[in-house]
Image (cartoon, rainbow, N blue to C red; front, side, top):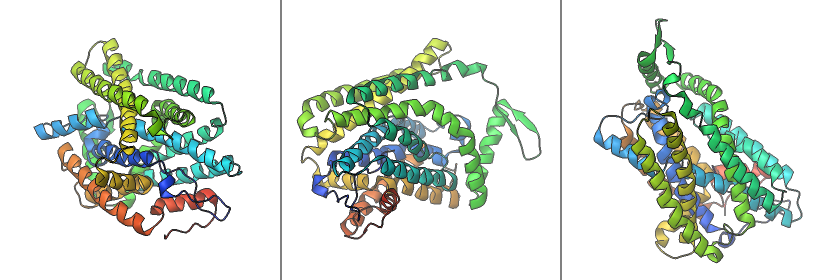
Length: 414
């Protein structure tokens, strides 16, 4: 995910970035994406069926099915695209600002990614196994090494990796009915397979993650992270790094740093990307559960391509909004959420853990409840983020990240 990546006020002379000088469109885009990421993640945080049905668990109730469709069309794979673009653009912008002050960037960039990797590992093990920060940090090391390349090279690398990312998803279509039936050993040591194994495993996860037993849940989360991280790298690595590089390329050509000068292009991307993404998702849904392999390939391709275009369209729309005074009251609060994206992202896991894991509500409600919970959490963040930033210069985790990046003490209070 993209967190704020602009230089800090440090004793070494990297001066502060005044709020008036910030690219507020980035903060706005982050703030909107914080909501989108939460909408997509909450089902994984609170439903055991998501872990056993590979993300296809919906439920029988009509309002749960409606909530599933809303998140599928508006959020799934879309906002992670936007976050990835912003992460790459933010790191590229940070590098430009640091170099302009005559400071070597690679050491700063590596410390920044090392701190993020530690935060991601702790987050995944102790709060939520679906952490994305560790992956971003590891790919961020690669991005730091690639940023000195020419603008043209960044563009070609970005396009190539995005294509490789698409190809890495296609083997999923070949699994289908040929996959080995799932197995699970129940509490009595009996080996179950097929649907019985899925049901027993779902029951097991529901019991563990509603137990309130911190160490038991931590052990289970650590096991999931260890088993699934390699799959995450394979499926998301090339695509994510490609989007990082695309974001850096967009900084080089000025689209993201000077949105007011590129309104016409951004308007075209918004008008083209969002409808195309929705159409791809709609076509994917209409295919339902295709029996032919080529239709399965097409279904996965539609999901992949739709997420890219719609995410890019969302980013273009956010940048366009930032160049106007429309709905300023709402916009300033979304920008505040975006300036504290790191803190607010981790807060998602803290708050949902309290609700699901420690209040015993894990797997007790469906997708509609998760949708309502996500909206409630985001509404709370829209209130507390401006309140915090009136008193402090950075979000609490952003402040800690800056100190780790520059290895110096930075003032927090205004």
